[in-house]
Length: 116
Length: 108
Image (cartoon, rainbow over all chains, first blue to last red; front, side):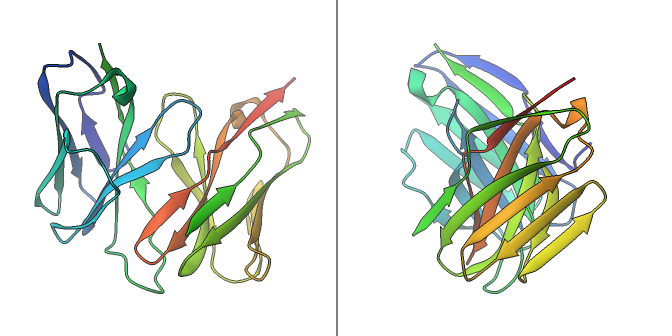
């Protein structure tokens, strides 16, 4: 139990489907993140939310659409994905980061996504 | 810009000591994290360094030199369960930037 819960753990979807990934944190954090982890590549930051406001979008294609209704929940809406989008999608949370402050991130177990 | 570099793979034997190096270039650097990730699982926090020097935590220690942009993770008395990927991550401004991870294989 990491305090950060992601569902589903595994997802297979076709290129024309629409699906959503969900993340929930019970740690009282104010910042939440989506990371993508592809085989043999580093964790890639996708989106950052601080106090429900999106503060970073790392040039992510529009077929990925995040939503943060409150500080405890984060969604990643998926539509018309490509096979190369198959990866492990990890959600993380931390205290709201600020300049000069350490921001340790706690990760969820991830959603293993396969696009066929 | 952000750039993190660490070896791809290392091997060691049970009971030995291994050092995993990491070099970084990070804007607004304010700390260096190490995470452990077993296959198919989430990364879990191991340690962080803010100031230069060595931080010891049981069998694991982490070192930082800010002037050199260099850190290492030292694992002592290796156990089979230590076989995992070790991720170096630099904290800068508003987020963490991760390296590709070092896959450590511990053999009997």
